[in-house]
Image (cartoon, rainbow, N blue to C red; front, side, top):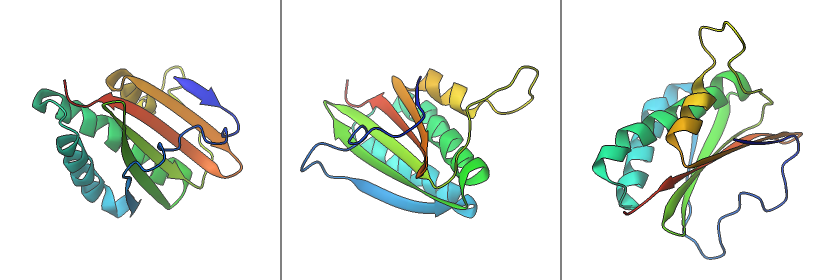
Length: 137
């Protein structure tokens, strides 16, 4: 997992001309976020057996965004080299967990295990998690 204190300009930007899907959400909208993620996975041609893990990873990060970051957040998706890229951003500043002996706080850890790449950026403009998942195989 990559962790940057300040966001790097252009680090998570989709390629020019790439179609980007976006959804703003709050805590009460997490079921809608999961449906949005499932639709994006299917549109990307993700293998059926991978979609459940994908939704778990997205849900963990989206939940963190609206419980540890800010009241509202957004999710963006786009394709990059056959992979599905997911970016979740909120206006807060939260730190990765879990701490030793913690009962919770393992959302980022789970998402990192389920994605092929995960980057966390925290700065003055909020927290952004960018994950990458294989699309069509």
